[in-house]
Image (cartoon, rainbow, N blue to C red):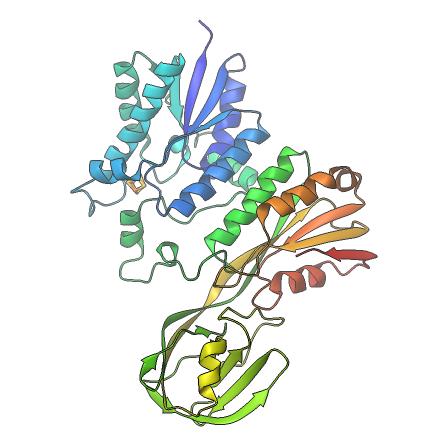
Length: 422
Ligand code: SF4
């Protein structure tokens, strides 16, 4: 019988070396990947790990099947085990579920062997995985390949390959319970979403970049990423009351906090082209009144001044001319460890750059549609391959064009032509 191996895959990093090893060790076998990770939280993280898994499989010409995101089933199975430590009973149940589903699918598709790249992870117990894998495979009349991928310098090979391929490397196993334990009492950014769309430095922005990379690589284009760090910012709570009525508002990126509740009135009014600035008589606060409905304002440069700036739409702005009583509260937080990245498709030293950006403002606006970028990539494939054109997706544009500034600082050579499309 021809060997057919179904390989359970949890993420790109853990798959990058085991898939190569399996191809070497079983050269005459059909190898197919099965990404099944209902344990991953949140769903955006699950999608990110899937994209990177697909990229690793595509690179090796290995077909990969994407399993369903059965979070409800996973939560049901692990009920009562929420407080178990990592490598404890909850992990056994989690492995059981994933290997059981792999064995079931293998049987349905006529495979005779199964295995899992979980055996690559230094944090997993090889013996536990081996015994669960063998028991499950036996129930379905299959063979389980118990391979300790870590042996023989496996970890070093995995690290080298994942670095070369710039694979996203998560910093937690996957489930929300392990995250709670890992960050005991700390704020967990991985489980929090601030703003709609793809704010700079968010997982959504990273997902967008990885989508474009996967698409480009499948067209045979070389890609590289350039990661950079910046001071992130978010609003923890804000309130703007005019004559005791809460009014809809945004807060400009980089605004600092206020202490307690501030009661203020308008001191000065400065009319500008597209907005009116109302300076208040306390707290160095400004309210920027738009001539349109309420939306976020993208920044051309990062903000270093941290005086609070509120943004209001036209309706609220008109009220401010009447010098009403205002009550204001604002609590914000800065985070120096936020990262974003630029994606370079093609040759960095190309004669012509076509540029886009990956992020949106916090309200989900000022972004570029994925399909538009794909169309431009497709219509420039030959020029990108010849090295005359490169497409660059800049990260963190809306908070001061940070990615663009980093790129031009790092790539100081002369540019003959840059076409900005978004
Ligand atoms: S820590 Fe990892 S293996 Fe254990 S239950 Fe959570 S996701 Fe599953």
